[in-house]
Amino acid sequence: MSKEPVMHSTFVIERHYPKTPQQVFAAFSDPARKRRWFAEGENFEIEEFRMDFRVGGSEYARFRGKNGMTFVNNTVYQDIVEDRRVVIAYTMGAGEQRISASLATFEFRAAAQGTDLVFTEQAAFFEGADGPKMRQEGWTQLLNRLGERLSG
Amino acid sequence: MRIEHTHVNRVFHALGDPTRRSIVERLSAGPVSVSSLAKPLAITLAAVVQHVQVLEKSGLVRTAKVGRVRTCRMEPKGLSVLERWIAERRSLWERRLDRLGDVLNE
Image 1: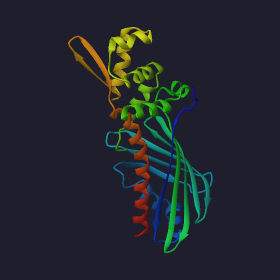
Image 2: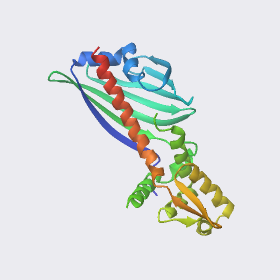
Image 3: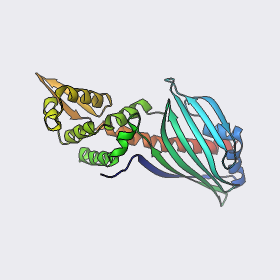
Image 4: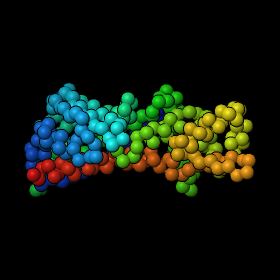
């Protein structure tokens, strides 16, 4: 059986902003502005948000949902090229458990009348309590097979 | 998180056991009585009942008693919770990047 241990997902999101790459980058490097679009606006209470914007620096966000559950984002900056690129590695936790680890890349490309932002995330999603057992067998393939059979 | 993480967690936990995965594979071919599930697995009926309860709690299977026979069947919507959870991650980032646009326009 394959040793595929976790569920992987890669997606790309593109946006165009009528601002210069410098202006878009500033919304990433300034903690007050980063917090506005990254942490605020979801239906969570922000318990803590802090960031150290440098390669090797970390960012920490803790949210509380309506049901009282706590979610934590732990981020480490992997690469920063001013006005061009930010690459982060981050984990998400729910309560006591890590639930995913991701590599996320933000590219800022000068375009006619603004900036094209290309966001790429490669995520690995973990199982819950039964960690080692889940890793032994290709359950992702099982899900795919089941999905096919059920929709057939 | 629009989709309860505890719900997703239950699905992961349910599928984390190889016996439960065997049960789910069998049920995907059609409904089976709980007692019939036990025989090929070579485990006690009590053990099957426990596994089925975990699967039911995760939303992956449903059971119904007709007369004296309890039958299990797959709940097709049960697996889609994982797909929706991943899709939710993407939409979370879409909302963030939309808000970035609002912040930039201030």
